[in-house]
Amino acid sequence: MLLHVNPNRMELIKLKKRLIVAKRGYKLLKDKRDALIQKYIQLVKEDKIIREEVEEKLMKGYSIFSNVTSLMSEITLEETLMFPKAKSFIEIDFTNIMSVNVPKYKYIGEGNYYTYSLIETTAELDHALRNFYEILPLMLKLAELEKAVSLLADEIEKTRRRVNALEYILIPDLENTIKFITMKLDEIARSAISAIMRIKEIIRA
Image (cartoon, rainbow, N blue to C red; front, side, top):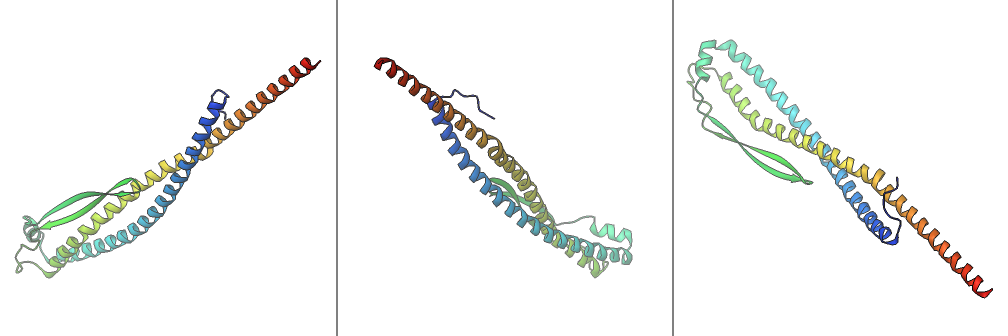
């Protein structure tokens, strides 16, 4: 499609400059898109590994805790876990990946999780709590990775649209308009030369 501009030399110069900028922007965005896709694939693979590890530990923790419930009475278990003295905090920071601000989560634990009587409880309860305690940082890492994957996917889509707009719309429109104006100016120049030649012939006659 031709752009709505006046077919003169000034507009032709402007359009040629715009075309240079558009091609440079296209290359930069295309490189950015490719780099984002590579990082996205890397994070997806890492996410898969962490997710499998979390699911494995959760299954193990539930299995151990199931044994605990069969060895301890429900009342004793509730009384044991009713007043936890440990506290958990999350620090949130951000890192920049290809102009995308990705959150980074850091787990901070304070206090002791094993504050109950060792006489009235079983060793399986210790194992279950230790397993769940070890899962928390992994779950935060998984949340961090999935958020990063989601943000990168959105940025890839935005960049892809910009690349396509430049490649299939703006750059072809600029090239077609430049070609049209060039042909128009050449036609005007030929008409002017023909007119001059006719004037010269008339003068000679």
